Image 1 (tube, rainbow, N blue to C red):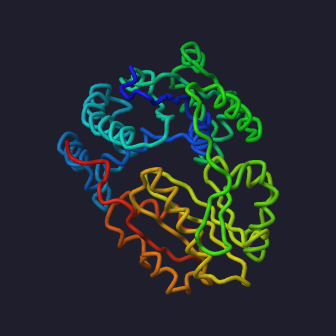
Image 2: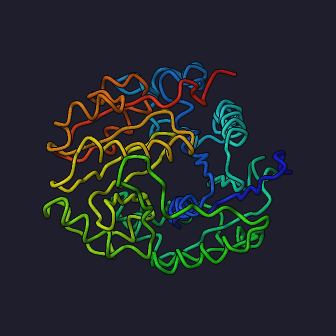
Image 3: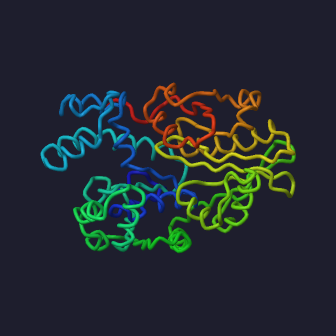
Length: 376
């Protein structure tokens, strides 16, 4: 039962490689607050997190890698072959994940909350949801995704798919079923149609964001803006990021775009995403003709505002060499030039290593002091 009156909680699930996370991010674009329960579970056992030592005490130091982190592959192989070990692991992790979800849901200002979890239907999280959304995909699509994204052989991919509960079983209990055939346009249309049905009526993100920085203002990029965004990326990056509108549409499954305008002209762009409570701005480009300090301030302030609204703990920005040299602008914004290994928190280090494009510099800013995964 939903314990948060006035909130509409969607439980989002589906089998491996069906595109659950893409659907979650699309709902985030539309104005929902989204939680990746599986990512929280991984984070709960990272070094320094509350579940780390109990897992090491339970299973032994042999599960650690050379850096002292829990080797998830070793741990996964253990619990895959030992149901009792799986129960022990879940008993350690689940209280921390439940606590984190409760904190995030309570703090959220959005009226629609989305909780994504691959084992949602088998967990107590199911009882927290007003609606159950199941994402499904043809097996061939799952195969192609696993082989392409995780570099698995066909046999390995098939084993991963067929070890899970049949998709049909999950679909039987679904309030909403989403068929993901690989077309981002079709997927967006399905999500948008279902979003409009949600009652009470959910908020829609405003397209134009007011600014007090002179003539600059920020516009949220929408899927209908893919051609504009593709052209802007190509122009402002001087061809270093030459992309098609189809590629931008695919990017909407992972990131959001903010377009900076000077009166009627588009003069800047930020492509950013939130994952595991860390904001990561991996595309940042400005027109050479404009004042960089003012433009950066307007664009990054909006990234931060949106990131704070999504309860991010830290902001990582990866500018190219031209914008990395704007030392005064970064100082004014409160960012420090860093390297991934100096970030301290393992989840932040991982985010930096995973996200940092070649030829960029890392700038870091702490957004929240109160980290969500804390000892119980």
